[in-house]
Image (cartoon, rainbow, N blue to C red; front, side):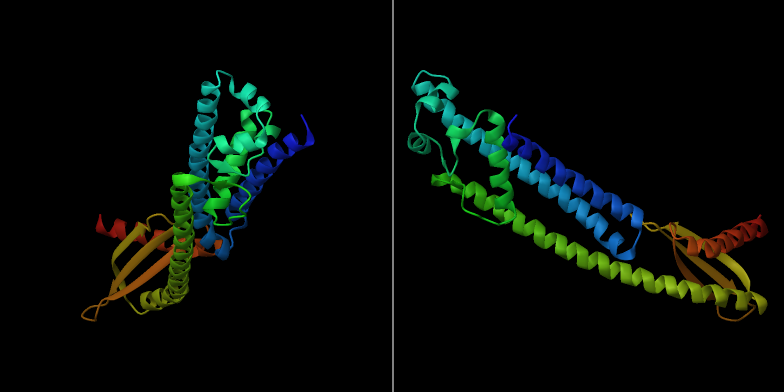
Length: 252
């Protein structure tokens, strides 16, 4: 295996390992800003990688069909036809420009170049070293459109997630104040009339509502949003769970 072949294996593997490390750091470091980006980053990585590979397979099939058709007309095997043709002749056979087919030693090199071309098209980099000829140019145009669409979508998702996180943080701060207010109400003779809790879908947050009443006075409702992964919220959650158990014992 030559140094060039080794690089073509090591570089994609390195990119994969870096992506895995970033995903792992999102889970381990547990910073608010990382939690905001984690879900969107993983979704975009999975979707973009899938689209790039799918289009790379399409380009690879087109290239293989062009070479197989030309080899069949010459009554030769594909590699025999490639070795007996000049680079200019091969450029006239295939519907791609910029491919140094004479330098390829296996079909693996074909696919790597198609994967590279697909990635450059999806991310709209467009170096121009490899291009498509003829009517098939509509395919990379469609892929570039998907790349712009999903890039815009991930930015929108980041904004929405950030705004949602800000709203939750405000409610969590309010929860701390409500915990002190709850103690004051209980000291003043208020009694718990109802307690409600539920897990917020697709999140690590628990929502609590505590209803209190004192005779003819207006009912008081205290809301809590607590992070199930934050140890700072454990004391409040334990107090609320104790109140729920106590309330249920009175009902029974």
